[in-house]
View (tube, rainbow, N blue to C red):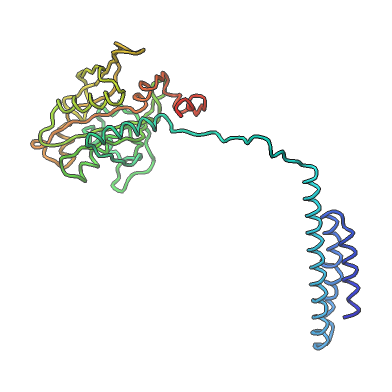
Amino acid sequence: MSDLNHIVDEARIAFASASRPADLENEKAKFLGKDGVLTKELKALGALPVDEKKRRGAEVNAIRQQVEALLNEARNALAEAALNAKLATEQLDVTLPGRGLAVGGVHPVTRVTRRVTAIFRSMGFEVADGPEIENDWYNFTSLNSPENHPARSMQDTFYVEDKDERGHPLVLRTHTSPMQVRYARQHTPPIKVIAPGRTYRVDSDATHSPMFHQVEGLWIDENISFADLKGVYTTFLQRFFEDDDLQLRFRPSYFPFTEPSVEIDMAFTKGPNAGRWLEISGAGQVHPTVVRNFGLDPEKYMGFAFGSGLERLAMLRYGVNDLRLFYENDVRFLSQFH
């Protein structure tokens, strides 16, 4: 093997003379590249007798391992030298004050949703959640809005190309009211539930958004009347706005899923909106057809339902005059609620 030892010595000198990683890789090629000295030695083994081939192959491999070890040492030395040079030129002043991370907060609509949920829970209501992609039957037909019914035009929505397993068209739900039917078909009276969540309609202006949040409420039992609706919703608004003096009025209206139906208006007795009537919710006694779709007998069970926009509640509570501000992600606006 003595005639191969010079390769190790030559590699040591060559690697030590390389001042840059690129130079080192060039020197490596002279020894370990496809045309390198050791590669040629390995190729030459094929012409040797078997016994000589084994002996010579072991010698070449031993020399190769030594050269590779020298190469790794040289690489580490260059990397350490580069790091030391960088540290010498880049100084860190550890006495500078740290840069604090901005503290996030809960979105105002989420705050309102949590507040509404807590208030209704305190009055004995359960909280239900359901799919935002709803089939036509739950979103319209089960709520007494059959196909081609004019009431459907009041809720222009986004249709999905696919259909469900029964062939029903799929839509982005226009309200959380489908949860009335879904929940009632899975529970027995008394049924007392709210369903907050995202809803979708083709609408966009200062007070409407293609996506918005709604809370649906339902109370079904044998002896639930309009008086219960008034009591529950009045209590809710007084707690939500922390104002026992606010006024409510119930105006006759029309919804296909309630009969009779009302629009609920409220008025503050103090503050910037004092004396001004503001629409806050739609409500009414659940229509007998809808009660049947619950799987219940409308001659025995009755109750009320309401639907309120959570953004509308947030706008009144926080004094916001443009609903779009909630979704523009302007940190200057959102940081006010942290």
